[in-house]
Amino acid sequence: MSVRTRFAPSPTGYLHVGGARTALFNWLYARKNGGKMILRVEDTDDKRNTPEALQAIYDGMNWLGLDWDEGPDMGGDYGPYRQSERNSIYESYLAKLEAGGHTYEDAGAIRFRSPRKTVTVKDEVCGTIAFDMSNPATHPDMTIRRPDGSWIFHFVNVVDDIEMKMTHVIRGEDHLSNTPKHVELYQAFGAEPPKFAHIPLILNHEGKKLSKRDGGSSVQYFVENGYTPEAVLNYLCLLGWSPGDNREIVSLEEVRGMFDLEKINRRNAIFDLDKCFWLNGQYLQHMTLERFASLSQGFVDKAGITYGTQEALLKALAIVKPKVKHLSDVPDWIGFLFTEEFPIEPESLEKLKQPGALEHLAALGDALKELPEWSHPVIEAKLKETATARGVKAGALVHPARVAVSGRSVGPGLYEMFEVLGKERVLERFHRAATLAQ
RNA sequence: GGCGCGUUCGUCUAGGGGUUAGGACACGGCCCUCUCAAGGCCGCGGCACGGGUUCGAUUCCCGUACGCGCUGCCA
Image (cartoon, chains in turn red, green):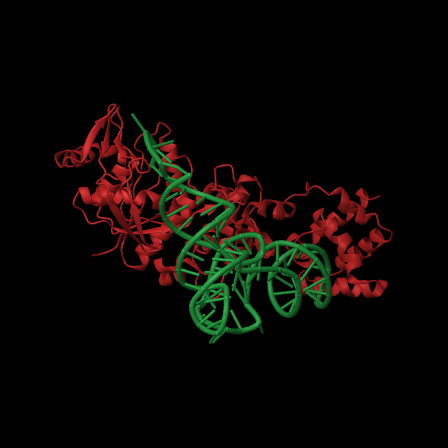
């Protein structure tokens, strides 16, 4: 039987990183085994259930690059894929339960009568667990339908998993304790339960369940803060799973080849934004300039930078790419290259006021002015030559020049900046800075 | 409270009856260097505790503690 996994989020208005990792593991397992990944929207009773909330799920999944084979947007053989549209299916399953005497009414709601036996759950991650369901006080009969006719999660979840022929249910460990209830339902339907795999939860720095308020709890956070999907995906893979060979940087493709349910830990993991941040810098540095440019484009446009030609933008991006850690920082890193209105940091301006700084700057300007060719190696040689002639270290010229040209003391390599700016603008900026620092 | 799951550096993890307990992030130092990064080197830092089992336990078993989850007419 071919593998069928599913990601079954409830539209809450955003894609939670925990949900994203659940989706990722389901995706990996399906793809690894040549199976199908299904997206099912669990929108049973919520009023907050809006088109925007659904869109947030699509957006998050799309951004991460996790695709699915069946879902609300594309259909499939077992649809519809939104629980709000599956009422007739639930009615028929309820009828089966009623026919079997498994239900009863309680204050208008419909409850499932537990068989009150020990239920054994076989979990691919947690092993075999026996749950004693005999005590109604600790394991009350679950409600499956509210008085208003709406359905309860446990019921529709199981019905859909049966109907959609899921072979593997990979979900958060918060459902482990619910699983015996689900197994009772499978048994009442005479259906074979799927294989379960409960994956550890993702916690915040306080060790609590990651909530909406925690930075990085939503995929949207990573989109807005200039993370690359490959870095986030890589980070998520490393939470509860490991390639086992001490590598930290592993592409989705590689993980897809070696992913295995048995290798998932059972331990909850605290989300470490620092490490995700580090991975992001790694990915940014090692990706192609083209990829970097396409990921940066949105941030550059949003910042309203008038960069002229695409070629000019590319040149600017090339010199900041090794330094940038967040794509959202790109505009700040390249902005001064495209306008003469860039700000000069007060602290940096102080460097220009240091004794000798303006003289060095003027001398450097004079030297550079004579340069027949304007390229990194030539500029560098000239600067060093000038420094030597003046009996100072290169830094004495570099620092004031950097401030003059960029308005700040931290930035891309000086010679690279010069090259991108061109001789005229560099010399102009030298003059302007000298004036400002008087 | 009951039930379930868990517990290796601050964090993510590798490992597993005999190891100097490995890696990564973070942190500190040094090197490189035009700044900042990157990179290189070094350092800091860990098997929750108590009993067993065993020649030997961080690894297996049992407790305890702690954490998390479930215990809804939330999902």
